[in-house]
Image (tube, rainbow, N blue to C red):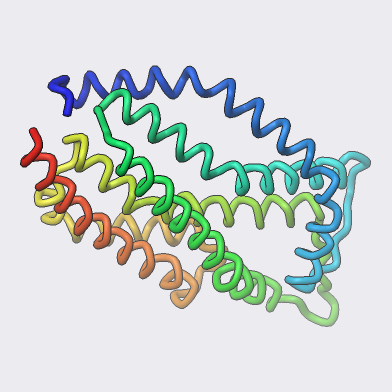
Amino acid sequence: MKEDSPVKSLALLILDLRRYLLRVLLLLAGAGLLFLMAAPRVLLWLQARFGQKLAFFGVAEPWLALLKVAFLLAFVVVFPYLLWLLWRAAALAFGLGRLSGVLTVLSGMLLFYGGLAFCFFVTLPYGMKFLLSFQKEDIVPTISVGHFVNFVTLFLLSFGLIFELPLFMILLAWIGILDPYRAARYRRHAVLLITILAAVLTPTPDVFNLSLMAVPLYLLFEVGLFGGRLAYRRRLKTS
């Protein structure tokens, strides 16, 4: 492992990531244009999956909605490559080995797609059912296709990225920025922050849906602490 300080190495990591930014943007743009052909079918499938009749209130709204669906698909498909770029920059800055790269990409993919699946099959159906339960005979919901796509996209990506918490904690412990033993003393603060985050992200205000987000997040926090301890010990042995 390199002898550079974690702060200096972190600065190098940020500089390396800046070099990859243009490449990532071009890749997402190209993939988004390719997925634009499949976006109408995906939108119809989402509409049928959640049982919603969609409307639009602007000339460009359907087109913009399809564009957002295409870039959502692009991000989901390209995400493993983004993980690999992140590890490559971290490897140059902190001297990480190839095995750590394989583990980072595989575990990151598992967490990200697991978060997407959890949101899609658990949180979104319950959330939409709760929000639409307020309709009455004289109050019929008219859902904009743009708002529908924004709603689904926001929660899918939020859950997918938040589920990366254990991997993020383990990497911070490995590079010496996070002390998992000290972080474990702040479990109460973590519970409070997780509850606030879950209240913000969950689409409904009831306790049941909030717990659907808060409980997995706390379990992921504990997994991150456990993995962070292992990474921290290994770092001390190799330093």
